[in-house]
Image 1 (cartoon, rainbow, N blue to C red):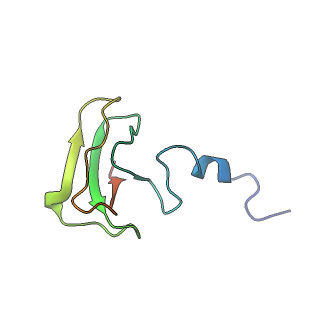
Image 2 (cartoon, rainbow, N blue to C red; image 1 turned 120 degrees about the vertical axis):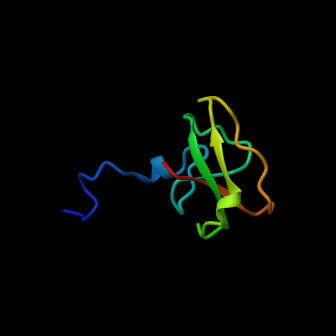
Length: 77
């Protein structure tokens, strides 16, 4: 028996659009599929300060560009 059996998490879940292996991080232009708060973070998932936080009001709204082109948006809720 393997340690991951029965957890319900597969490599396929990690590879779906907008879901990076570092966690719940999305690229600019991705549509995360739900409204909520997102904060800009670097490629390692380290959050930038609060002024880089946004609120999406619609389920189909795309994420805007980030301050740095190599950054991502991290789901906060």
